[in-house]
Image 1 (cartoon, rainbow, N blue to C red):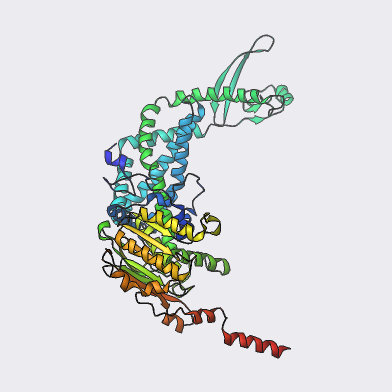
Image 2 (cartoon, rainbow, N blue to C red; image 1 turned 180 degrees about the horizontal axis):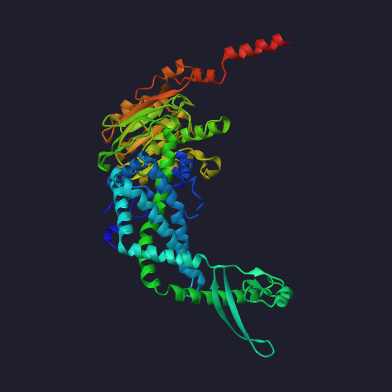
Length: 565
């Protein structure tokens, strides 16, 4: 088998760094609320406790990202290709299980032969299905990965070795799958004691139970050769478990010798070829599972009426992040699930363009560190999570939830969000926040992305502002990308002073969650993220109106109560 065939991957192009080297960070998953979305990748697939987590495929290589994006584009463009590869996953998982089971069996065991033949049968059927598709659709494929897969499938199928394998498989299937019973011969001495026994024949008919007296009286044994005079084993009646296992072992060992002799001619060469060829496909099962599941979720996002785009991958050194029309995919999937449970709209369908806010974000020479301020319930956390999710999806090699995007990979996505109450250390919430930030700062490089949400919420605004200024200055020196969603409006107003520090390598800029005028005119109170200086308003009055907690409404309630008395 050729070298490129052994090393072929749908996630890593030739000569790229391969392997599952990334670990899954539970803090990151929790902060971004990413797990519900990633779990949907495998929602339609059968449960597999050994499933590879999608984040294990996280990569920093732009060439790997481009390679995957092209494959994703092929899968999104061709529904038939997506369906074919989706259907392959359970077959490949079956074949992998048979392969593992076969290796655990002795080669003389009947089960070893059955597992070998079953694995061979799945492989032949699977390759036939793939060949029939790729033979006609090969010219329509655009990605290098899919073109290589199609070529290798076609070359394997049309090779002399596979054609011989296909012919032998058909014979074996006919001979093995049609076995319904065996005939055991027992020699007796003059006192009718068994002295020796052996397997007389392997039959394609099942024996039928019969009545001993009727059988003896008719004395026509040949016509009734498939009717039992009496069962050899009475359903364990009178037999110990050891005796039952002993009897079964005797039969299985005998059958194993029969199978061994019947497949002796094909096993050394054919099984060796099959192991190499199936290994090529078995190594793809986790990759196919990831790709087909991810595309299904991307289609679900697209069905909401919101865009998904193929991002342009820039080099890490350029530290690019330019996204237009960004939204939070987890919010969309959650809204689709909620709508499907309360209406007749099928899950994954229904236009959500009027209820989901999209925003733009650009890191550039005017701002590589952003302070995001705005009112409570103004979408700051959702937006911060959206930025992290877009970066994550980009580095998984997926389309991102936006109208357009140009992005560089980062070496790590780091988050500092509020922890659950039970996670607070003995130092208290504020002490825990500071301790975590010290550890986070030590991890950061100039190519990291740090996302912070309501850091220092546990202390006074005055103290928090002072400490946050120290932190932001340190992050400027560290020279990484930062998005800091905060309630500290004074911090945002001090940006010019912070930027005057000669130690800073990067500039700080402001983002503000401001009222979306168009949405407000339409009756939907929502907030757009804008690159601007904060105006000092927290929109508290607007939020109070949203929840009905205004003096006007309270007075109206009192008046209504008095009139009803």
